[in-house]
Picture (cartoon, rainbow, N blue to C red):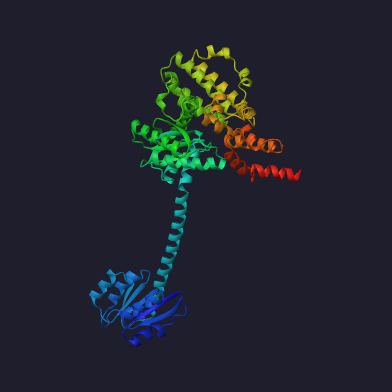
Length: 533
């Protein structure tokens, strides 16, 4: 419903409009009247005025003066002017101030009512537009709040091959999420490897601290440079720099500062693996290469590594980008797409000059891809080897055609084997669990465990979480707490001795961890057990 205000210095004119016209069929809730501009202004203070019908020529101040005031204080009001003079100057001013209409006296009541009907329709459209704008603004704000999550999910989908790396698929998504890149644009990837936490965290604490590392990377690595820091579906952190203009020297400086501050403030030892700029379409390849660099680094922690720090043979450098993609497809069991990639690869090779050394390098590259996939799936390598006639290697590298045939056969056998076999817990995880149980009373670190199974510590942590569903730290704490609970049931064991037996030389720290896990202090737990027995 709408409110109408009629302004005129003549009482009869106001009554003629309010009482002389049948307004009952229109959604007008109330009528108000004023005899001059100042009185009209006061009406706007007390209620909302939707439709203003005003005379122009009035004493002291004119209707034009009133409209100027209304345009500043009640912008949604629609104004219809009435005047007894066909004065072009008034009409021109009314148009400039965007009045809805300008009618000459004596007023035709039917015409005035028709113009009020039009004004009401205008009000309805404005209300609908405002409601739409408010709804749109609300959802746009909600979407913007979710945008960082949506951007991270987009990159997760790209890295896990849920979104094909084609221009047709990437371009619309990059535009939708306001990522300032094109599918062929340059992106530089930095793998942020959390190698060790200096404190023992629960799974929840570790998630919070990882989030803190992510924020630190955004502040220190990206700083004012376009990009995002994301966590992939396996928990690996990457800093993505869009159209990077940073020199290697500046990147190295930022990485070193990031590593140093994470060590001091977040109790985390971190290494940065910096990839070469590549197109968005090849980001999966880059992440695979960086993970390979991380996996191979078992000697130096808390350091910055550039991709070119790891030297490869000429043959390997030609094929590794393609083989990295093959590895991902093999892991996901995408046989048809993988074989298509094999065919496309050999078509490209046929147009190049290759020698025997290249064929031999390619052969062992394919073998390495398959063995790596088996390791990630926790499959016993020896069970696949009987399928492979290793003596055929000499024949396979004699010609490109023979190598192509052998590759297709080997890849097909590997896909079938991986699809038909799988284990819940890998042998590596079993070795880790066994090591922890045997050394529970000792002061050992995650690096000690990783050295035992010849793996990088950050890679081992991800592998352990993926295979067991829990963190390595939580497993160690749970094992120690369970042993402590068992020992506390024995009255002749001192609590301080029990703490030492499970690797805690600081009794206060042990007591705090025990209460966090059980809700009771060690003394309370023993007392409760004794009362029940």
